[in-house]
Image (tube, rainbow, N blue to C red):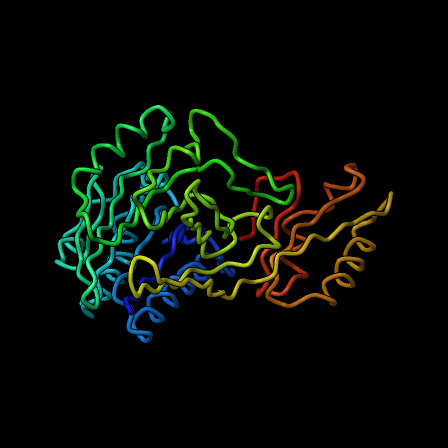
Length: 329
């Protein structure tokens, strides 16, 4: 039985300044903790291959010391003998930063539409894929799929890896569903000769099905990046193949700090009454929560400021004020 670990959208570097202006809890360590948890799980469970479905980093331009922090982990993982395949995502502008760390023989990443061939537990696998197409993938997809098809072996188990929006995928609290469009791959366009489609980009874990009943797996992001994801479980997939017809997969949950909306709904506040109400409300939630404060009457918003909140909230909490870009996270 060949075992594959599949994760995506780790967004390493999110809220992780190298030179913070002030000491406070940052959310960046949460992303690294979950990333390290997955790597450790792959090692202890004796996985045969790890696939990352894109958005390894949180943005395109990443400081060199930070690149080394991420790549040192990947290099160390590759040293265990487990190969790792990475799809460059839109946050990497479809191209991973260059580093000597990435020259390890067990590290593979897509630079073009291509296929990596493996024999895992005596089973041949073709891991096909391409870097994220950030504009008009609907038009370009057929040519990309055709370019890869000639590289596939007839008897192999074929996995197609990408970082794209696929028709039918859902996101957000209102279950927004992706329909046909320039930046969406129609579900009927997915080639039927693949045994499984693995994709990043959509932050909610979910499984779609192709027209010929092959699974399309989105593992989702490994940590909540926005309040639109506050009720979503975060994790990764463990996939096992006995052969082309016999396989299984399961979602493995990761720990995520709770995200909580707190409504301040009185018509009028003073600094003192606002302080008292916030203290009352936070007494009922977990001390490591990420809070979004909402003010019913916007005229009270000037009272709800960083000085007040930094003075009364535990340092274990992060917060944001609805309607403001400034985050304490």
